[in-house]
Length: 181
Image 1 (cartoon, helix red, strand yellow):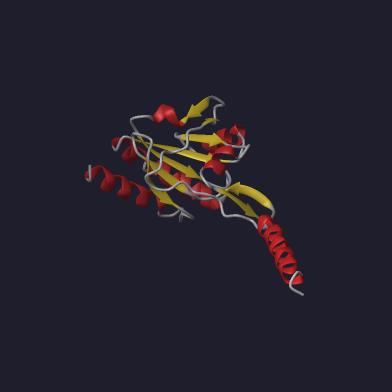
Image 2 (tube, one colour):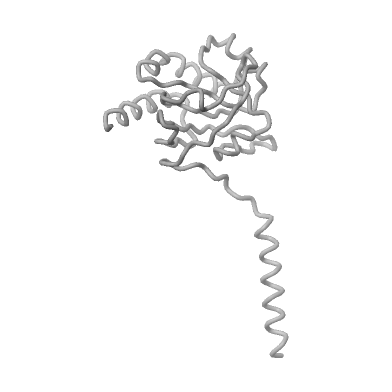
């Protein structure tokens, strides 16, 4: 009996660890104060765009699920509406989704968007930023935003944002962060 109990315990422990290894894990989202993961992705015109190109500027790096959908269109319109305010604050708006560069080009043309939309069809950057989600069996970029300062440090993380008010929230936070320096 003495030998059976440790063997039973080890068997249960092994079985539990096998189930735990198969359990889905939550994506790891970079935290405020961390260096922003660098990247290079194709923009809507097909040319490569890297985070390093924006050194010295604030970057609003926003992930969104899909071109031409209602929430994504609203969010993009609000960023476009406020683009002069971002420029006045030395900030660039950069959108990322898993859609193709061609889809982004059509979306920008149809919706009158002048800022960069980047194609992350391999999910590499969305994964680095903990911003991949599964919805009804399909993978999309999660609606998350990272406010990156001119030195490449993440100053604010927004998860599961509300498209209607998001641009206003980001502008207010940029103003607060700039005032505190």
